Image (cartoon, rainbow, N blue to C red; front, top):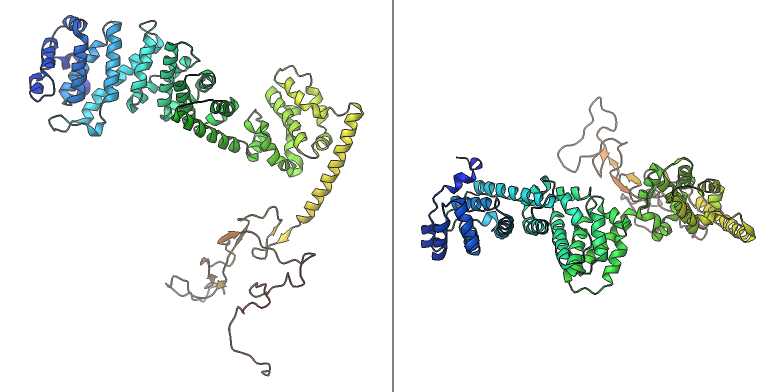
Length: 558
């Protein structure tokens, strides 16, 4: 019969050779006596035996599942446990804990052999065990949704899940049973010893699930992350803080968790936690790893390209870069690109957007530009930002109003003191304009002597110039396979090729990239021969060895 079609009743009708197991010392004499009393008895009789001497039977069942791997025997004991789950709450609780303990302690599938040396049929046996585990996970989820016992149902379910979620099969079944969302409400700051233990075991379940990608994807759609950060902020229990920190470390590189953590202020929380005296080495290491990971992500999320994309798309939000002083110091000159394109787009957002958050962020960014750019106030004034901002001063949304306190820099038309400040800014702006003009003069276009393309110093990079480092020659290729010969209808260059890459087309794109190299120009302090070179080979040293060989030619020869 197919194992998938077996029922509990059919399995329990089997005759298991307990005496043989005692002979081989796989069970004790006492165990044999207990099993004879229990085996093939009515359900009421078994219940009475469990009430009278339950711990002894539990020890026998555990020893059988740990020491005996014969398929029929394993199925028989699992069927007994499955039957127990239909009893009263005490039996359910103890049976569930026993089964969870057995599963978590079982050897790995590749290590399983029969005690008598026979190899097990791992496929059929694992299917049976997986079916039992799936039913157990469903029962545990049911306890989380609607506990059978008002005070013990949820703690027992979480305790068992904390032991079982080490198993890949259990993780998969738990996610399929929609169990992840049942954990989130249990993650909240705790005060009593009982609630702290429940919180710890719940977080332990989330930590185990953080290694399973489908569970991580589901966690991203819940409020688990904000709840975890609230817990780690307020908890003083070291084991709770440790497991939450390890969860956050695992989630940091996945999906959009990094940006959410930064928005929720986790970097500051980590700094606060590091200042406390912890004795757990795993916690200290986890905090260091989390801090480094957050710093790397702040740097990545604060790139100007990302900021530019956010502004140009009009999707302004309080991402980390907006309030990062280092971002503004390092990138303030980038705002000058394309005639202050970014500033103009920010002003367009002020004119057209109805999103209060986008308006608030745009105002804040303009104030940051004024603060960090040497001529920021005058540039923003020239772009007529004042009128747009003034229209928003009475904006009804509470999120926009406070941000305008940061924009006091634009209220410079009141009083003589502000007028003087504006005059100073104009002088600074004039200095900045003259400096920019000098920089533009230096940015005159040059011609590259290798690829003959025009370029400027600021646009010159290691991949700007594409060229052939060798000559276009007429001889055989280096592969020595054939000589090139011109056919009667071939063009004159048919047998020629670039000696560096073998390309036979004289107009073929270069095979090497590098910086553009300009023709030589004398600087004001250069020596008279500084820009001179041999036109044949480019050697700049007047005493350089010749680049060509031939017969000697005397002065007396005609």
